[in-house]
Image 1: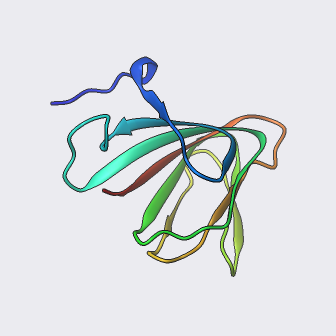
Image 2 (image 1 turned 60 degrees about the vertical axis):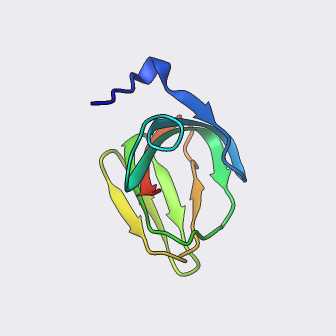
Length: 110
């Protein structure tokens, strides 16, 4: 078993993520995983990412606050415990348009 304590989770840099702190909870350099990695991101009010796609699917789960997920065809505001799946190649942008911080969990293949 490999445990990552939140207080010991290491930050990582994510390109084109603005006013966000990203932490690696599982996978990549945090733990040995075979299929997925999990990150946790804290978004300040006004935080955002660029509209960008990935070759693999992504699953987002909002832990707290409100995060808007936009694709080239739709926009949806997600609240606590709401989640969404983005298909491989589906471009997305994240926004925190609220006046309060938000936290979102990301799971995606290694």
